Image (tube, rainbow, N blue to C red; front, side, top):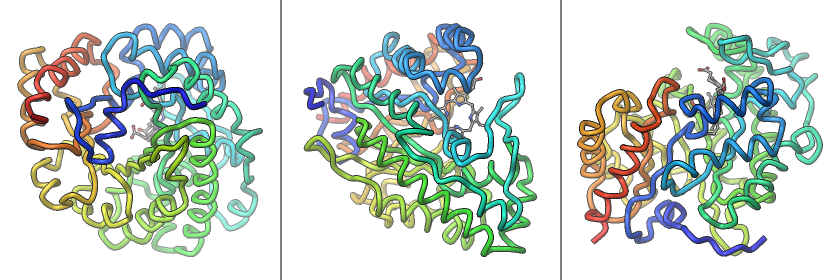
Amino acid sequence: MTVELKNDRFLRALSRQPVDRTPVWMMRQAGRYLPEYRATRAQAGSFVKLCKAPDLACEVTLQPLERYPLDAAILFSDILTVPDAMGLGLYFEGGEGPRFERTIQTAADVAALATPDMESELRYVMDAVRTIRRELDGRVPLIGFSGSPWTVATYMVEGGTSKNFSRIKGMLYDKPELLHSLLERVTRTTLDYLNAQVAAGAQAVMVFDTWGSILTPKTYHTFSLDYMQRIVDGVTREAEGRKVPVVLFTKGGGPWLEAMADTGCDALGVDWTTDLAEARARVGDRVALQGNLDPAVLYASPEVIREEVRQVLESFGHGPGHVFNLGHGIHPEVKPEHAGAMIEAVVELSPAYHR
Ligand code: 1CP
């Protein structure tokens, strides 16, 4: 599988190499804001069934690329496939978020977790990666991903989305060894999972630490960052004769950008609460930055969207090392034309920052 990559702007920017314009993609670019996504999900029967059908997962991965001049595709899947395969039983209750049939509360629960085989229990993900690579045919690179061990563990302990994270934070303070033993298991499986995605054809990997920011500075380091460090250290960094860049994203992780850069990852995702100029000054030339338009800007008019895009480009400033993105996933209520206005503005306005 050594197809020539026709558009490598995204990979170049992650390595802080010169580009003709700033590459752009959107977190959750394949998702509920697109009518064609909702149609394919209906055809699959449910979100979980869509994830488990490689041909349909490939179809929805490519949908946003048909509409917009995006510079990367992201595997259509979910961070919760990992705990599902470890035996917890993922499901979605109509209109609500993810739920697990079983949760982790005791050492016996951790001991009972399965160690999934990437080419059997999680084969549907690897098949999706292979199918997408074939269908992309080198148009743009494919991003693989996982959750951070901490973020995945929040769902495993809470049983779903949480408001106060009472169970996992109770565990963190009362039984830190129990939580570390869970994080250890999740980290090992996550590493296998990301390495299997790279072996199947993922050309960059991103680790989503959506809930790192609920931790204190000290516990962020010991319960989230240390495990992401193990992922950075253990993930395959080269494939098909090319570097496989690693992007770490802690939502709300502004206070910890230097520490995240110190892991040796290639790039940091930045949300809209941190100014890119400040982030760039702090991390210097150690890592590239990805972000950080407030997703709520896409509720505004195309003229306002264009101006806000200009401000994000201006805040990063001139030179390589920026991947344009939203600061978090696109909201389901956004009009597809508004996402288009954002992408068009990046395409039109960003060349000036690379001359
Ligand atoms: O009804 C539907 O169609 C389900 C909506 C949906 C989608 C489109 C879910 C359920 N997951 C996804 C896909 C998804 N999830 C991708 C696909 C690739 C793309 O970006 O296009 C990715 C990268 C994720 C990652 C993910 N899942 C994260 C980390 C990133 C983030 O957004 O913070 C998290 C926390 C999840 C859990 C999850 N899965 C789905 C939902 C609604 C959630 C969030 C639940 C919560 O708020 O706690």
